[in-house]
Length: 360
Image (tube, rainbow, N blue to C red; front, side, top):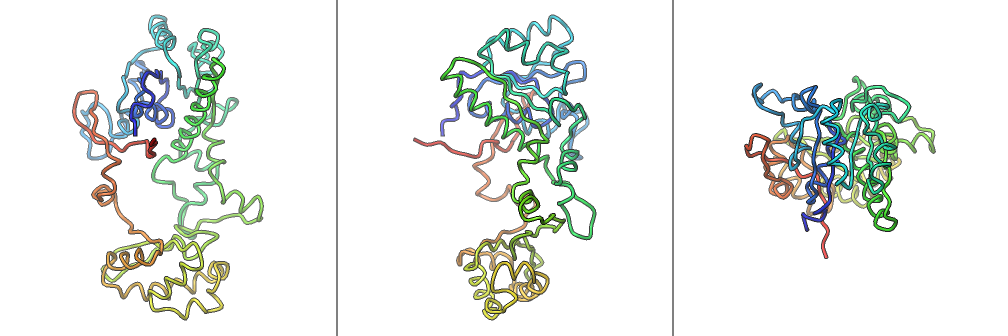
């Protein structure tokens, strides 16, 4: 794929933490010139200081910060200073897109709001992220949004407290929403010559991402509950099993043929004819009876690797549960790694945010 797809496009990023910078990274990876403006008065993006336990305290910036900021040019400026603000206006005058994630009212105080910039630069695309929308200025960190929109309640085991997702997924989903809007605005500008304001909130993004869990309630009247890795509508799907070596794997049986294939492979053909398990609806209802029967047979396999090989050969969806060292040791992961460098010039390895290819 052409990694310079956006060559010549100029982005000014007035955003911090994860969601806004992830939008800037998308364009930087595809060839755009991205200039990130950080608040000099506060020491820059707060994530510079969000270091993993293995990182040296004296290190300039964190691995967290690098995850969405490699490949950008960074300037530390205090926009309350008139000279600094004038410098940013100069950058924006030559830019195609500006990305902001101020709390409501914050951009206007600094002269970086949409009405001000659109009046000066009518072709500018103004990409804006908020936490809870224009009228709610609550601080909006990802776990707060997970709580307010049901994700925290739904995540974890049934008899245990709520559990947050291990990445700030709502931030990342909001970044996808915003960059999709920016792409539409760029297309519209090609046709009309006019810029636009593109905006989304973490809150709206989270609600949109509830997908089938939302409609389970809205349409079916079923209020989803915590089920661990299990699926409210499918069984066995998300259920975890162990082979004799103690290694864990997960099954994702989505259609009846896959269940029949699983039963045949495990020498449990009678289960496929059992009235409790013949259909997915029956398996969901009798999941507690089904799982021990499957575990008993799976536990006879000497290794996870040998069972997964057979599952894959029979077209049965299953996966090994891996920690991150194991994940990034897999040959399939290597194409998603990118070599870059930090601001001190030291080499670093990051994961690409662009996971698609365009050919032809």
